[in-house]
Length: 178
Image (cartoon, rainbow, N blue to C red; front, side, top):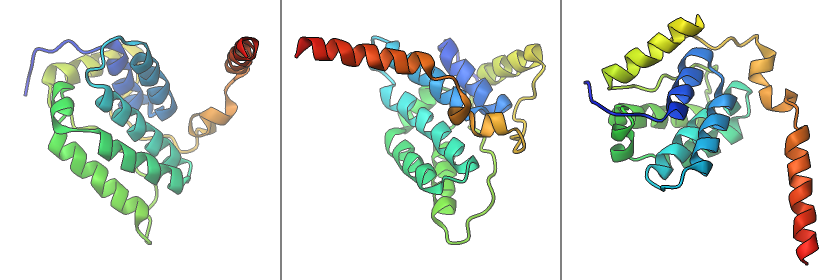
């Protein structure tokens, strides 16, 4: 299926991180920043749901099954067919994939982590993502490198100095007002 749609660059970046680099932490970061900064609320639930899918996979890959289940349940609740269709996603197939992943996560016979590909229906979107991957010399729908510890445990290894400074500043401003 091909449709003429202009997608936000942040969404394209999300798809590249999701399908090529398998950097679910960056998926979360880039889409969350976009979601928080935009002025119009349309597709809010879709952005939140896609962020939660990435966070769920990040947790699952790190063997944090409780976190993965919680995020997957929330993602399924937030995602809806109309919004996914607008984003060029085969909504019915994607929801089934997510429900199956949730069943797997809650099964007593939990399988090893496996990647998930978002089923895209928009041929132009797929072509654009593949072109960007080619330019970056990365493979579209590549497998996660489970030996890449910096990727797997990214949130624990990042420099949080600026985040901490910002929080401390905000707290100080709040205390001044009291």
